[in-house]
Amino acid sequence: MKAAVVIAGAGIAGVSAAYHLSVRHGLQDVILCDPRPPLTLTSDKSTECYRNWWPQAPMIQLMNRSIDLLDEFATMSGNIFNLNRRGY
Image (cartoon, rainbow, N blue to C red; front, side, top):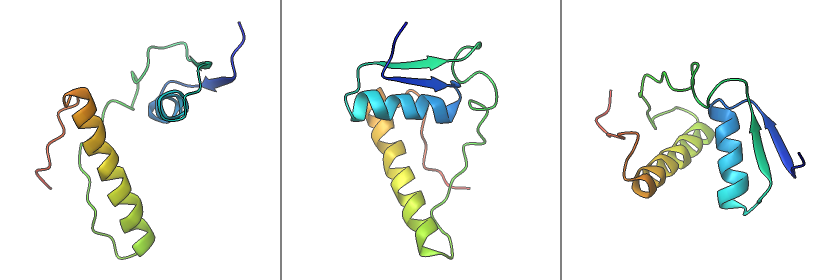
């Protein structure tokens, strides 16, 4: 089997990398390699808490971008992961 990119590990980082390479950048040959199904260890055990208040500007920018991506994925997927901005 040949591929342009092989990603070792189907946790949250591997799945995210595969998504961005294939969907966002149009790469056709992306393979995820993992002996387990995707997101079956700790990646799917989130506390589902996040915030965009931080004392440092770089962290605020990073979190705001992350929250924007969460909103975008919720819209694209019909909110399959039940995003709810209720705060904590």
